[in-house]
Image (spheres, rainbow, N blue to C red):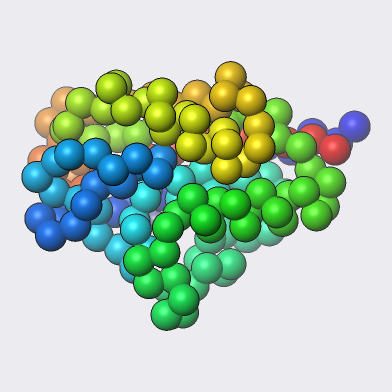
Length: 158
Ligand SMILES: [Zn+2]
């Protein structure tokens, strides 16, 4: 058996004129994340972890922000395309662990739905997806509310 691990990291700027979408869940908040697609920072970090694990570069290569097709694109749809790349190459996802870094809002009420969305999109069990959220204690760009970050790691095998 071949086992591979991957990591992903993503950051998006917060702006008043956008919906906040994390893990495919629209979360009520004063600000949303800015970006070419729906700027779902959690889903992007997970996509990068999966692509990294199988040696397929990053989301910028697969879904370039110079391509109008990805303007306001739903990131779960892009995640589905990443799942297709894995399955084409016979990779199975063992697990995904991710952390969202955001000062506000409280994300715990939305975590179950985020897990459901990610697991369903990837066709894996919900217990193979773990999503955590933390603040950075008011420090740095996440602490001051300038942006949000997400980290993800995954294990895949074939
Ligand atoms: Zn992103």
